[in-house]
Amino acid sequence: MATSPPLQHPASDTTVFLDQPPSCLQFCPAIPDCCIIGTYLLSEQKDESNDSNIKQTKTGSLQLWRIDPSTKQLTFLWKHPLPYAVFDLHFHPRDASLLSIATSAGSVAFFRLTPDEHNRTPTLTPLLTQSVHEDPSIPALFLAWTPSTWPSPTPNGTTTTTPLDAFAVTFSDSRTTIFQYTPGPSAHAPPKITELDTFPASQAIEVWFAALATFPESTSKQEIPYIFTGNDFGALHTRRYTITSETNHLSVLLDHHDRARHHTAGVTSILPLPLPLKDDSPVILTGSYDESLRVYHATRRGEVLAEIGLGGGVWRLQLLSASSSAEAEEEWTGLVLASCMHGGTRVVRVRCSGGSEWELEVLAEFTEHESMNYATDVWRPAGGYELPIHSSDEQQEVLCLSSSFYDRRVCLWRVRV
Image (cartoon, rainbow, N blue to C red; front, side):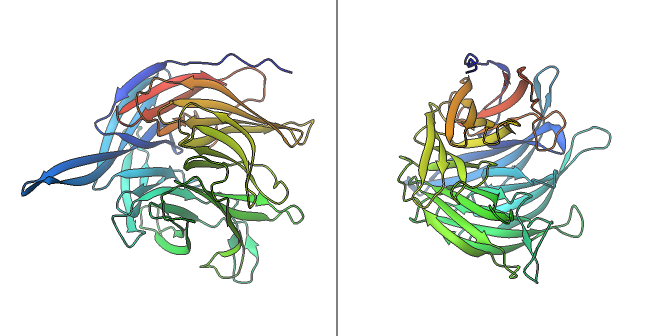
């Protein structure tokens, strides 16, 4: 058995402090050295006529920062103020300059981040802000795009190689809704948003996370669409769809939740793994307030295949790389980046051998954050969506950007993986 590398405790190369608390961030796939940071500012003001009444206002911003990979420096470029707080942001998985956000006002908004041809500051163009809940006091908590493997139905009931362009939004009142996204006639024209499916959680509580994924069917190899959601009571909800000719509707083939049998606190992150179905059910990673990362078999009752404590609530998970053994078909290894709230950031190796033996190992812990680490991403030298990790045994240096909320701290640091 190979010797495990020593646990790394990296120190930051650069630390900056924002004017507002950072809630989410992502490097732009179209502009590799630029990162968008979403912020969430809660302001309180006393009612002049009644001191016991306090009015709360949520505002936020999108901020653009540029990193210099050679000097490991961060430079502030601009700030786009918003009349609501930003809960979540994601660049589109195929349109690399299209940015989407989920807001505290029960809405979603879309922007285009355009690079300057003379290498000056990129520009942000608002495309559309649309209410996605009838009550603007109900915040949209998370937004997830469909992957490129999500099939698109056609009127004759067949599927096409063009993916269904859609996204899911979760809310604080237990609802999850899937919307189709139809781009405008030009890159800077407003898109059209159409509802495809909506469903509540098992109980009226916050739905913190949604993950959209597909898994190949064992015989036909046709991609089967799934959505997984996690709520504040610790329940994981699995919904499987079938492709029909009704282009404005998703037909539900399977719908179940695990009744919080396996998570002792809220399910706050879900990462579908690029593995075949196991006994006709997906294998995923889940993160929870209970500080555990779990390899989870998403059957009707659910089954924990492996778990490890990460020393903080596991708020976000990102798959950095994955590889399979050429010699053994059932050998798989993945590197996962975890934002662990009060625990900081972790880099975790997830390994499966023999198709059923799972091993979780923490490779690095970044612990300089002094409050909630809600967002982390890695710099991809060539942009795009994939982090190039060589298959050699030599370790490679990865540049990470992480944040913490209440102390408004953003750190740039390095780890070897």
